[in-house]
Structure formats: structure tokens, C-alpha cells
Length: 334
Image (cartoon, rainbow, N blue to C red; front, top):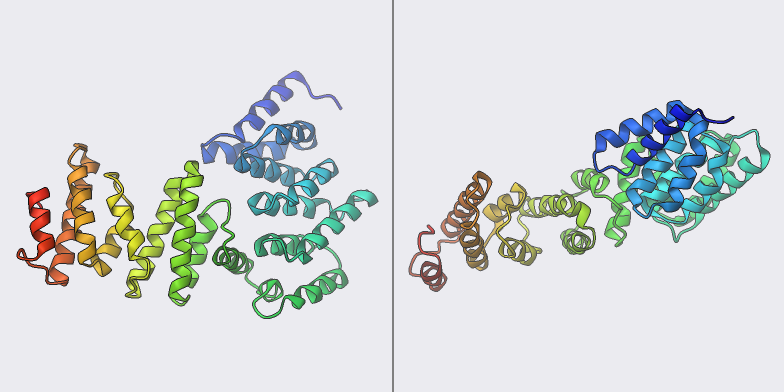
């Protein structure tokens, strides 16, 4: 059925909004496209082919999931191979068509989901998403796939798939992937997993995660601030456990520039900062003097507070060599 000119214009506008940086605008567009339904499918599929941004591809797949049209199945099967959030969103699209009345569509979706869930080369969260997409099928099909997943052994996807809390299962899969060096596309799910696991995970695991996230910050400039906040949360978790295994990163981050950091970095400094941190903090304090904004002044005060806390806790007096160097370079601190 042909789309009327007014409806075509609205569809085009909504599809364009899926690439917006405004989260609210993007979510509204996804919801509206779901209401428009099958008339929007062709344009969404065309848009996917031209988009390189993964977050936009995820948004397109979420819109297709809300529509549940069999025409989206080939695209979703292709997207499964892209991994990460794109593959997770693709599995959700295939869930809507795996019980399709079109036998070929249903069979293709089933084969793709089963293959993805069993392929040990895939991220655990992608495998879990593919398994969850089979939940509307017969108990016999689910049981056979779960039995195959159990071949992963203890701590594998089979164990995660048996968790009754699906949010907890997803967080566990994201966490396991991350500590194996496979970070998710965005830090949000990993932040939730960190809250669950940080108090008990081996300290060196958190140190490796700090290094991996710092590398991702440099690669993913669009989400660098959010990744930075997550890295700060890990430093805070390490500090609460009294660990200095990643103090080198905390020290280098403070010293690297005058820009205010999330408060979690300052919290960690207050708790575990040592004498080696004093000069980096002083350097950041001096650099922050160039920022006359209220935020810059507040950052400078926070640095001075952290500096004093470290010096007091470590009993570093003015006679110490490092304090003499600091007094010469940054008079007025302390």
C-alpha cells in the first residue's frame, strides 16, 4: 500500500531523528515509528544501509522490533554478525519473527538465533540475547539449546541463562565479557554490573578494566565523558577496598589536564592517594587557575582539599623534599 505524502514526510522525519544525539527525541521517534508500523519498514531498512554509527543502527533495529514485520528478518540476521549492542538489538528483532506464519522467515530466524547462542566466539551477552529470543518457542526447542549451552561449563552462558532475573543475567553476561577484554558499545550496562561485582572481584581484574576503559575513551570520543565516569567509579571501588593497584592511572589522569573530573576520582584520591600523587595534584591545581568559571574554581578547591587530605594522612610535612618542590612551583597551595 502506498504511503500518503504527509505520512511519508513524517516517516522520513522520524527515521532521521533516530540519528539524533538527543535521547528523548530518539526514543519518541522509535515509539512513533512503532505506531506507523509496516509502512515504515522499507525506509528503516534503507536507512540502516547508509548508517555507520552503531547507536543509530541500534535505534533502527529497536524501531523494527516494535513493528515486528517479516521484511526485517534478513537485515536482523545480517546485524547479528556485527556483535555488541547491534547484535543484541538484532536478536530482539528476530524474536518478533521467529514464530512468523512465513515458514522461510521463521526457519531463517530460528537458525540464526540458535547458531548465535551456541557460537562460543560471540560475546556472552550476545549469546544470551539470542537464547532469550527463543523463549516464545516450544519448551523442547529451549531445552535442547540450553543443554548445548551447558557444554560451556561452570560460569558459562548456560549458568547465566538459568538465572531467573533477566536483568541480573544480562549484567552478568556484560561483566564477564568486559573482564575478558570485550567491552560493550556503551558503558551503561557495565556500570550496573560494576555495582554488583566490584566489592568481591579480584583487584587485578578491576585494574585491567581500568586500562581497557581508558583505551576506549581515546577511541570513542562521543562517549568519552561517560566512559571516564565509569573509570572513576572503578577507582572509587578500588579505594573503598583500600587498593592502590591502579593508583598509576589515577595519578596520570589527575595530571593530564585542567578539566574537572568526576567526583569519584577525588574520592579515590582522598582515600588512597600517597606522596607520589602530590605533585600531579599540584600541577592540576596550577593548570586549573586558567579556568575562571565557577566550575573551574570549584575544581581547584577540590584539588586543594585532596592535596591537604593526602599530606595529612601520609604525614608529609613542609620539610619534605616533594613539598619544597611544590612550594617553589605552585606557591599558594596548602
